[in-house]
Amino acid sequence: MLNKIWPIFIIISFSYAILCGKLDSLNSAIFESTSDAVSLSISLLGTICLWNGIIQVANKSSIINKLTKILNPIIQILYPEMKKNKQAQKEISMNMVANILGLGNAATPLGLKAMKTMQKENPKKDTLSNSMIMFIVLNSASIQIIPTTVIAIRSSLGSSNPTSIVFPVWVATFCAATCGIVVTKLLIKFSKKEKN
Image 1 (cartoon, rainbow, N blue to C red):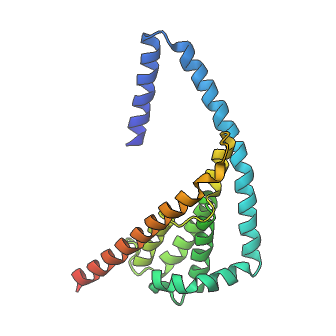
Image 2 (tube, one colour):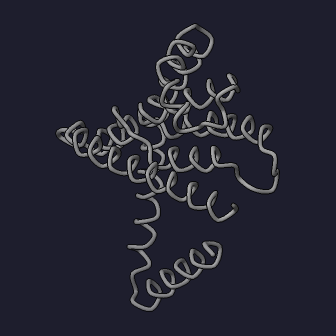
Image 3 (cartoon, helix red, strand yellow):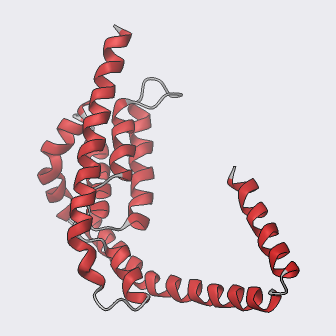
């Protein structure tokens, strides 16, 4: 779908610029936006490298095991199918920590690892298990204590107070995670009743 929408937008933009004699404005906008994109990418790169490094150090040390023990009661409730799978619990907890720290880019590879591990336990390989569904929901609507990426973007764009969004982010992500968990649990319960 996006493969059709974006080319249409580009064709309309170029056609409008040519017909209205604004080709110079279009050219300057293209060069300014590419320059801004590169600057933003470079400023985000430092933040992402720092937190990816911290996650890797935590993974090699005993910190992740301690975090897994802390998060274990929550993981047991949210992912009852994974109670005996220590590897899945470790990968889920690492993903949760990355999301809590607002590191969407660092959370993605950790999430893919966790999904692969959960897929091994999945009896129906062509259908998502309940744990996999819950994981996707929580990965999309995770609580963020430190919205690192958003703060870095706001800082790079010259915000006078880039951390002012922290409290609204707490409220929004808490509401999103709570709604996601409740709806997913209800749908899982409903689907089990339908099967019986």
